Length: 471
Ligand code: FAD
Ligand code: NAD
Image (cartoon, rainbow, N blue to C red; front, side):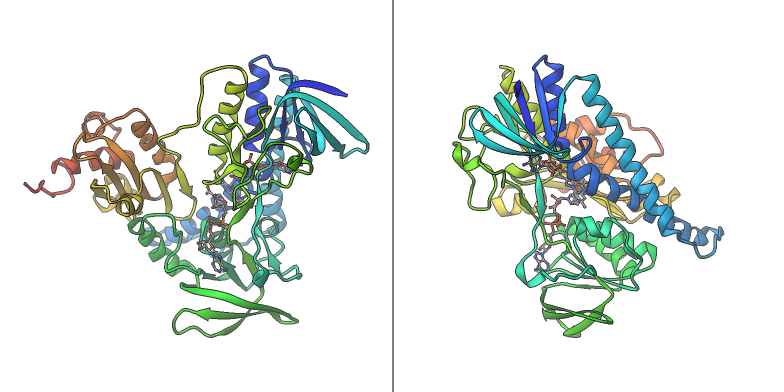
């Protein structure tokens, strides 16, 4: 029998951040997860392996692009075994690190699956065999999410993959259909396109990345039109049939589309659903909403006073950094600190080429809510740094409250947008206004200047854009 102050169920970026902080605050802590080391979806089969592959995809694209600068490398050779080994080694290195941190913090790590006995007891079916009972003062549920696969897209055939299977890089298919033009579809679709597959993306709505502002998506869509074979919008897959020569797919909707097409492989990436299926949870006061998310308040408390929940299992956005922050809030609350999860900005980054990133209010949200905001846009064609990189396909925009001149939102599309957005997050959280951005000296020549110059655009005084303020 293990007796702890805090037990965390699930060792993803939410769960391990929570367990580590609990130990740092002097609480006796246990962490339960089926893997050998903490990491969860993000490290084992999500953020990290996909970004390792996207790094390689960007290198391939850059090398091809270099021909325009007089540098020729010829056609690249791709050793898939070596590439897979690189990605696996990235994951092993990170999870080895989290494993060491478990030991140095003296967190009790139980490798197995937990089920709940009551509001202060759980049982772990250990991977090594046998069971362990854990008595706890507080538990944090951090069991994450799993791919959502509607019945029409279910087909028991190894050529139909979810993101985990696609990250395993079974081969480089000649043709790949990606179902879902969201984060995973576009990121992993980009990887396969760079490796040489003819990629078709089918998206049921009228545009890619439905949650993002259209002006940002348009820039990406233009590039994708060159790197991918086709993007089918307003289109659904109604049937998939396994044949010897490939997966025969029937489409519905869309315009001028061949209704039946055969693909070597299909990647289904139509969203993820919360994994709240911890056995025994129904014996407690923990409640789920109609979409299956665990209901929590701002302090990450569930309906059961001793049980907290964080990360993908409590709601969108399903992002690793949101999970980690929620985990730390839950622990602070358990430790008796005054804390709540109430961010002004949770950054979102789509790691395509170009990247799309946003934080705080989006233009789409402002329009829907009927709020008046001033949008100041700085096109990267006017950025010295973007020109030196030969990547002027970018845009930085600020959403500004015209009354207070405060920055409410930031949206960026362009190479490295994911790194640039952090300044936007800080500006929003610190209550910065357009003058603050304009007056902060940014290094030259860098893409960060696009944020400063977007601030200048607001006043009609951007050095590199002639756009006088309308009076
Ligand atoms: P998870 O990471 O889902 O971890 C939950 C853990 O709980 C798992 O290890 C699971 O095995 C374990 N578990 C489940 N049930 C039990 C049980 N009964 N007992 C014990 N353990 C249990 N997000 C980003 O922010 N940036 C990215 O670039 C990014 N890329 C992604 C790419 C892909 C392909 C995918 C699929 C996701 C990506 N995400 C990304 C999303 C990100 O992975 C999730 O938001 C994040 O992992 C959520 O963290 P979590 O701690 O809530 O849960
Ligand atoms: P998503 O919600 O990002 O995109 C799913 C897309 O599929 C949507 O555009 C949706 O309209 C479309 N769709 C739904 N049903 C469809 C159907 N039957 N046919 C065609 N299109 C359909 O989901 P995802 O790409 O599976 O990713 C899941 C989540 O994982 C993301 O929402 C995000 O929270 C997280 N994630 C984040 C990152 C990152 O931060 N860079 C990367 C990957 C995943």
